[in-house]
Image (cartoon, rainbow, N blue to C red; front, side, top):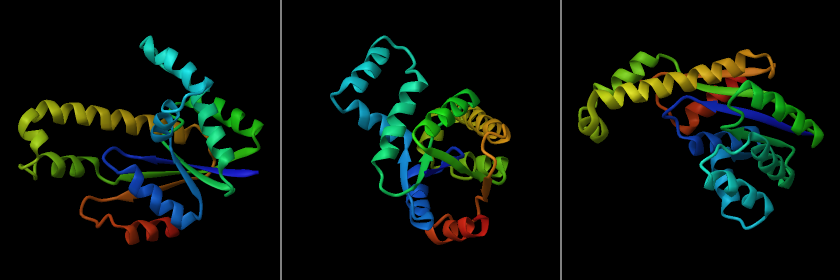
Length: 194
């Protein structure tokens, strides 16, 4: 049976950076769902054509199709441990995804959540201590409000998923804005949680 671990990240944390660290630390393969989705769309096959039909009509792609993309990719790996970033995003998706995985002899063993320890401190440093931020200069407080709303919405969705009890083993790694966010510090935090 293949072992899938889920990785969730607060906004403003680079998925590819954390993926590489986790792959090395857990000795696993990794998938970033949004990149995998774009790769699928670049292919000319039945699944890609079905997805394009929804996109061409401006409709949301059914999550069942995303499950097919992800489970197909997991089956390509020889490694039995895989890390997935960015999916599922809702409890309904998680419930359905777990069933689809079991049919492919894959189980979710753990979830990870990398989060900012103090959101207000992070936000203040991001928007108020760096007056050279070109986005803030151009869009000002409107950008801060939009960013804050998106950040808090994402955090609420992740918390809701992790509190659902659908994944029993959840590890949380908190980062403070003052900390060095480098490979070694993240590796040590993973070791201390594992």
